[in-house]
Image (cartoon, rainbow, N blue to C red):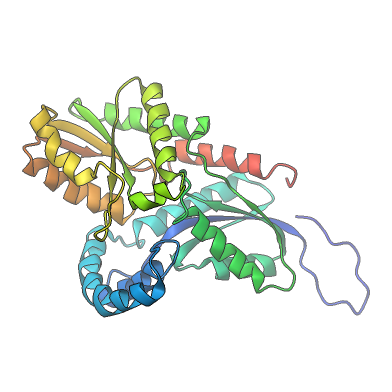
Length: 335
């Protein structure tokens, strides 16, 4: 906190200047019900960074078909992973912010979601009103993608565009190959694998999928995922099976698909596996339901015998240690 110095008698109050840190993750509905999920999906799937189809073609499909069919199914999926603290993603992102606030003295730490609540615009407005004139934006996506990282940047810039007196901004870059990130993943995996009552025949690293077209247009996401997996494999001293999940629509997506990998591994003699999602900083619907529940069913349907989903870094000590190191580096000169 930096004091503003003495003010003239008739000057309105001025908040002491502060440094802010805003953690941002993808988003979550407000509740696991059809209307909340519909509202969330409408915002998410209307983002032109997410669906790169001309609006004149896409919006009639979204509003006429998808938003009238998908919310009920997604609401059921959310109900399977919802807790008394809300969605796993919101809970863990909030916990990450709380723990970092206890470590980063002199920094106002908050959190937001790109889609849903709390919104980026609301949190930036509150931080500015509280006196933050320098704010570090930290998209919690280790691997850069236009559909995730760039979309957060868009929302941040839109929010500050409406401000007359804008704060100075910094953006946390992708950290897919940062030694601190690789070490946090390795430490977490080694701990979780050691706690299993079986030895995995294979370890699957499942990243969120993206349309193949994004790679062809120059998005580095696929390369970032592959590099993360390679570095982590080298650190662990064992092979990782890389796959991509959450396919949507008819377009060709990055592969191989996680569901097909899970169904095929038992036929290759890999009947005991562990799976984790290194691209997700916190557990969410795609990990708790798609991997831990449906993934297990797919693996067993293919003849698998032992299956373990290993949780994301979440608010674990390795996670917070890693984030603190990355964020202190980006805050250098401000603190």
